Structure formats: C-alpha cells, structure tokens
Image (cartoon, rainbow, N blue to C red):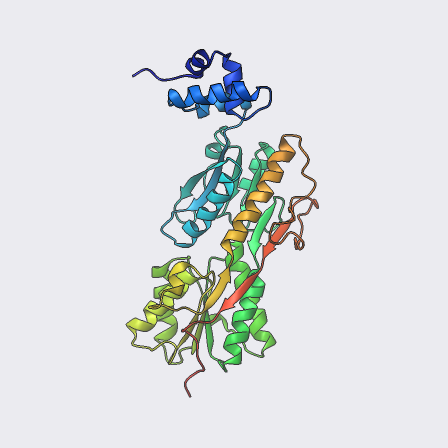
Length: 357
C-alpha cells in the first residue's frame, strides 16, 4: 500500500505542500477555510506527519532523552511517568534511555542529534557527562541528583530536611541503639542523606558509630544482606534508618528472616514513599517525595535551557507555578546553575514504635 505523503494531502485539498506543512504544524499563514480543507484532506487520507521530516525542516526532534536506571527499581517508573506527562503537555516525547547498575550512558548516544534535550536522573556526584553535554551545546538538567560542583541546572528533593524528620521521630520514640543502611556515597542522594542523618542524630545526643552504618546499592538483596549483618549480632540495633524505600524493604525482609517483629522489636524507616511502601502488607513509615512536582520542575528547567539555546528569553528558569520556584536553594560556581529543592513530608505508618524495654 502506497504511503500517503503531504503532497497527496496538498493535491486533494487544492493547496501547495508548504501550506499543508504550515497548517499541520499550527503555524500562521492559512485562512480558516484553507485550514479546514487541509485538515479534512489529511483525515480522509489518514495522513500521519513524518517525525523525521519534521525534524529535518525544523531542526527539532521533539524528543527528550530521560536517562534512568533499569526500571526494575520501582522509584524510576514513578518518576519517569510524570516526566513523560509533563513533556507531553509541551508536545515533547520522552525517550527512556536506561543503563545497568552504576554504569553511565555514553555521550555519543545522547549527542547524536536524536534529542532536543536530556534529563539525567542517575548522575553520580563527580560525573563528567554534564560538562560534556554542555560543551556539545545540548540542553540538560539533573533530576534528583546534584554534582559536587554544580554547573548544570539541577532539581532534587529536600534530602536533609527529610532525614531530620525521620531522626526526630526515631529519637522522640526513645531509640538510642540506631543503625543505618545508606545508598552509595558516590550519589548525591546517598551522600546527603547519610551526612544529614549523622548530624540530625548528633543534635539529639545520639551517636551513629561506623560499625552500625552500611553503604549498599539501592537494591533489596544488597540491603537484606547488610541488615542481616547488623541484626544478627550480640548487640543489635532497635531501629534501622534506611536511605530509601527499596533499602527499607531489604531491612524488613531481614527482620522477617530472623523472626523479629516490626515494629515490636525493630523500627524501620524509608525514604521516597514509593507505591509499595503504602501497601497494607508493608505499611512503611517513610518520607514522601512529591515526584510530580519534581518532574514538573525538571521539565520547566529544561524548557528554559532549550529556549536559551534557541535564543529565546529564559530569564526565569523557575516559572511561578513550579514547585521550589521561590526558593531555588544553592547555585552553581558560575552563578547560572540553580538547584531547586522540592519539599518533603513524613508519612508515619506501621513500622515504627518505642524500643522494647
């Protein structure tokens, strides 16, 4: 079956092919009557505009690369979903580019002209990828991650504030023997939450000794093994504060394997509030991150970067309706790389209680 082209639509509508192209791209220049004829002809022929042709004519692919870990970690689908919906509102398409473990997507894959911009959700603290993208002139934003020396627009949740909420809760319950399972130190989420926890517990007069801290991947099996080490000893902790919900699920599994009741014999807390955390079977006490707000802020920042590349006004990278717009805490070394922080809240469920006497 012959493929329908814009020239076929033009022939049926009795107009030129450029008129068809302008009309289907919602550009000015066609009368209402001409516009109606073009749309009717396109519908009659079941014409689908070619994305590749549009890219050639506009130097825009309308595609945004969303770099993510493999979607087996439930956090990432919950973040990628709202990112995709926000991009759709601007006639942009999210293309998820995944990598395994602590690897990194290669620059060539992101800089081959396939994408108008890039959202980086897994960047490690000292990654050179953002600088490489900057040097190639590719608009990009870090999402839920921050560089040690931020030089690219970034947005993240309030990691330190969330950890303080957890520390206040656990200390207020009377726990003194506290352990922690934290994410990889080379990630800003793992680093910030770990540092904030030590400081928050110190403010309550509670030490967090090194032998009660484990750094693990954001992975159930790794956290299960680490929690077993912490719990299966002569002086087990009465509470384990975890760097995210997936790690907390590993700690809960360890407690179940050892026959420890939660929260009767062990308090466990998480961070992120993934959907699993709210299931009645789990009922995890955790910190809720507004991923819809994080996604919208990231997309707004990226749109500003794209507009700046195209020579359009981008004076305010935080639109008035963007969460964190009025309080972009922190800035890059050049003063042009804001870090937007999304507020968090404590969600007390069923995995915390006073320590058993």
